Structure formats: C-alpha cells, structure tokens
Amino acid sequence: MMTRQEAIDYYRSDDLIGIGMAADAVRRKLHPDNVVSYIIDRNINYTNFCTEYCSFCAFYRPMGHAEGYVLPKETIFEKIQETIDLGGTGILMQGGLHKDLKIDWYEDLLRSIKQRFDIWCHCFSAPEITNIAEVSGISLRDTIARLRDAGLDSIPGGGAEILDDGVRHRISRLKCSVNEWVDVHRTAHQLGMKTTATMMFGVGESIEQRLNHFDLVRQLQEETGGFTAFIPWFFQRENTSLGRFVKQEATAVEYLKMLALSRVYLDNILNIQSSWVTPGLKTCQIGLKFGGNDVGSIMIEENVVSAAGTHHRATEEQLRRLIRDAGFVPKQRDTLYRTYFLN
Image (cartoon, rainbow, N blue to C red):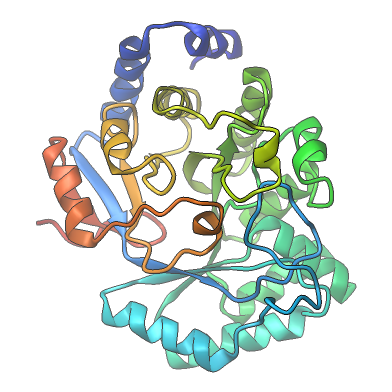
C-alpha cells in the first residue's frame, strides 16, 4: 500500500511514466482479464432549483427563478423509456437541493418508476439525501431506508468535490460537510446498499487536501467495503463564478497523475473510472494505461457539467473502439460493475 508521503512525492515528481506503470500494475493485478467496461445509462436532472449556490456550478437556479424547473413524472418516464430503447440498464437521477420536495415526493417518484420499468435507480447524491432528511424532519438512516424501500438501488458519489472542509467552505459552504457526506455513504453501506465515490479536483486545493479526500474514502472502504468504484474528474471553469478565481484548469498530465494515484492509493476499491466527460476521449483512452478499468457511460443526457462549458459526447461504438484501440476488451456493464456482454 502506498503511503501518503509517497503519493505526494509521486505527484510532485516528473516521472509520469513511472506513476503510470505503477498504476497499471495494480490494475492488472485486480483485473487480469484485460477487460475495460462501460455502461449505457442516462443522467436525469429532475430539478435545477437549488438553495446551495455552489461557486463551481453553472446548472442551478435559485428558488423562484424563471428558468427553474421540476420535471413532471411523465417527462421522466419518457426519458427512461428512451434509455431502455437504447439498451440502457440504469438511470443516474440527481438534482438541486429543493426546499419543498420532501421524502414522500421522492418515494412516490421511485415507486412510480419501479411500477413501470425494470431499470436500476442510481440516484440522489449525499447533499440531496442530507437535504431530504432535513426538510422532511426525519433521520438520515430513516431517509435512506425509506428511499431504498421505495426503489432506490444505489447512491452516486456526487457532492464530494474535495473532502476537506477548508476547500468546501471556500467553494460550496452551504453544501453538506465532509462528515455528512461520509455519514450518507456509511449509512447506505450499513443498510446493504452500494455507492460510488467521486472527486472533483482543480479548484485551487493542495495535493495534501486531495490526499485528505483519498484517506477518507480509503478508510470508509476498509470499514464497510461498500464502494464499487472511484471516479476522479476535474473542475470545468467556464460559465462558473469560481472560474473567475481558478484561472487554469487541470491539465491532461495532472489528470493522469491523479487517476494513477487513485488507482495505487485506493487499492481496496476494485474499479477506477477513466473519465472522458471533462478530459476528452483521447485523455480517457490514455487513462486506461494509468490505472483506469472503466470509461463510464455513453451519457445519453448530461446537463450539469455541460452547463459549465464542456461539450464532449460519445456513442457506444466510439467508447468500444477507444477501448479496443488501447488494447483492451470492451464489455458493457451494469451499475454494480457486473459485465454483461463480451464482443
């Protein structure tokens, strides 16, 4: 296991190939079958109303804003049917933190979806779940248990940004704290649910603060074993208020270093996703030699990161070709990283 100081030294060194080889060795040990997976699913952003005003977000609208919306159930059903028609196996449903949507609204939505569709619901980030508990006046554990019983299958890692309260106070001071994010995932794991962990870096934080994030994720995984994957990506500055202060986005080299470090440092998490949404397809492909064993979703729909200025798109065949051209076998997976097809 890599130590914290070794990780910092690696990050600060110029030996990009060395850190890539170290990460590739861990990937080969954990995934000796040479498979790289992807998923067909859809992001459904059920509302853009939000009370948090995070400085890195260009998607949200304040309560009462003319451009704000809450999607009607019929619209959500149409989006799910389109996803299934395209061979999709899941939906990733997330939205803003709405002060008027209580637990019964979410229970009704989940039950309505499950009555109509056989689809995996990977929904509601930790800040959303914390918000639902608060506005509903019930405990976090009861909130997650009720959502699970209504049809919630797993929880995405969104809202983590950097798990360091100093960074969070600067970029998202109204959003859930580090401890609240950890509590949501720990409680979900205790209730038998799987979740993912994410990291959005490149908002002016230090490598030490990024390592604080790694440490929390690694420790919780040692405790519960509930994380299926870790997904690092970098801040997209265009159209955001934080972008005025963060003058330089993370480079492809920085992304590859962080991807490789996450693979070596988080060796107790089976899957590391090489992202293409902000870095682009070529960097994502190189990331498969830097520890990544998954390329995420074809993303039929995505609104949050694209609102901040990124416009990368990918079809299933593009992702399959990207994987093959990097020397791997592409396999479609489900949300729990169980692979379906071998082509």
